[in-house]
Image (cartoon, rainbow, N blue to C red):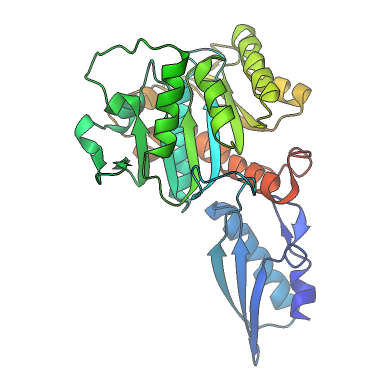
Length: 354
C-alpha cells in the first residue's frame, strides 16, 4: 500500500513516479508511523519541499498518521562512462558561454555557481576567459588565495566554491598574448593540475565568441552541457545563435539559453523600460528547441555586488535579479538530471515550471 501511494508521486524534472525511477529506499512501518528513505536528484530546496509535501499527502491519504522522511541528495552525472581520468571526480561540467562580450556572461556564471552551492551542491568555478579573466574581481580574490601541495595547484576557496582563474596567476594589469597551442596548454593545465576533488558541478566561464579555448575544451573534457547567455536585442541574439551552432558542431549539447539584462524597472517610480528589448532569447529558445532558463532583469545592485566581490545572490538574495538567477540554476540542474537519466533528446519534453 505504501509503494502504491508513492507511485502516485511524480519527480518534477523527469515527469515519472518515484518508484519506477528507483528513488524509494528503505520503508519502515511501525504502527501508524511510516518512515521512508528517498533520493532526490535536483539539489533545489524548493524541489525537495514540493516532493516532501506530495509524499506526506499521499501517505496520509493511505492511512499513515505520522510520516518521517529521510532525504539523501543523489545528483546524477552526465559524464560518459568512458570519459577517462580527467576530472573523474566531477559529475557535471557545464560551460557558460556567449557569442559576444558585454552580455554579463561572467556575472551569470558566478551567480549560477553560487546558487547551486546554496542549494547544497558541491561546486567549482573555472575561469577559462584567459584574455579577460574577471572571476577574481567578482569573487574578491587575490593571487595569494591560490596554494599548492607540491604536486597540484590548490584552487582558491570563496563562499564555498573552489575557484581557478588565469587572473590568479597574473600581475594586475598584465596582458596575455598567446596563440592557440599555448591556450590549449593552459586549459589542459587547469583541468589536469588543479585539485578539484569531488564536485557535483564544475562551472566554466568561457571567453566570448567561438575561438580556440572553446575548441580545446570541447575536445579535452566531456561537457555535460553549455548555457548560452545573451541580451535581448537582435544583434546579440544573432551572435548567440552562432555560439549555439558552434557547440552543435562540436557535439556539445546546449542545455539552456538565459536572457540577461532582460528588462529594467525603475526603483523609484516602478516604470518598466526594456532598454535592450525583451523576450528575444525566449523566442530563440522556442525556435531552436533549447530550454529557456529565464530572464534576469537589469539592476544596478548586480553591478555593485560584483564590484564589491560579493555577487548578488549572496549580497541581496531577495532581489529580482537574484531570484531569476536562482530559478535559472534550479532549471539548469533539472535539465542536467534529464540529460543524465534520459538523454539529451527531449530536454524540453519534461520542462517543469520555474
